[in-house]
Length: 380
Image (cartoon, rainbow, N blue to C red; front, top):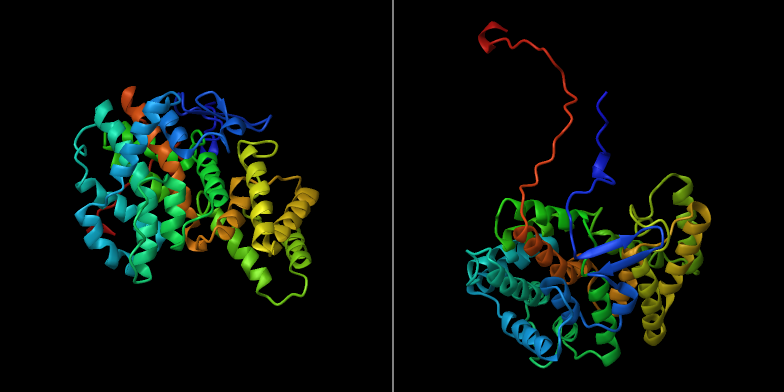
């Protein structure tokens, strides 16, 4: 008897990669052999993107050169610029990201080549442009111009500047930068797999990234952080005198009804997601600085209840929600912010796939009927 297929391809090895690795039992994540706990707060997002895309940590000169590529790559092409107002009027954030990245390919000078050099340059440009696209979209839907980027600042500082219109503090920049590092890659998740399937046909990097963005759009993948924040806001806006207690009571009631709580549990991690530990600390810090840590305290209460009832730990999405909120990022842009960081990993996976390629074509198990006889329409 043939072995039954693994539903959702759980535990099926779909590709070999040197980019990231997870020890689910120990709760550890590695980028090219470096523990995420060493990188978060120590390596900048640009250093991390370079590590993923180019294979090793950059030296001072290499980092300066890469930062120069990022600064030069921020410029948006004419098709993107011309289309932004209409896209902002008619499309939600992740739909817009999918459209804008596709349009950006038309103005990329390396769009017709999958060779290593052009791919490296496209990877840097896509990494540079994604935060600019998110901020430009947000500005366009509000009918305003996005703040110009500071050529001396990095991705995190410029993104906060362009989203809020105010130069961020050094600590705010450090926190968002650490968030981008934490989200940069995560082995064969759904959007990365989609990018690699597309790249395996020898399609181009922009097409593969569009496939990844369309996959990240789904609420079971990238949309969880937004749903977490919506839930917190709904409880707090309900008029309860004790929103912390109300959050805990609501979660307890939902769990006992068999409902799933977004932001908890992970298919790979059997213990705490190492990224969640960093995000919890950042949420606590930002909540304290803001003078109103209610959302953080609500989150902690929810975490306690879920663990007591189900033994589940929060995943990366849970505390990312309140961190982004405290940084002044609009809730409906949370998934788009995820794409800003994950662009580093997606593009690295596309290059890895192109470098050692075989078409990804899994088999399937047929479960339909057999032996039916077709009757022509005029005989029925």
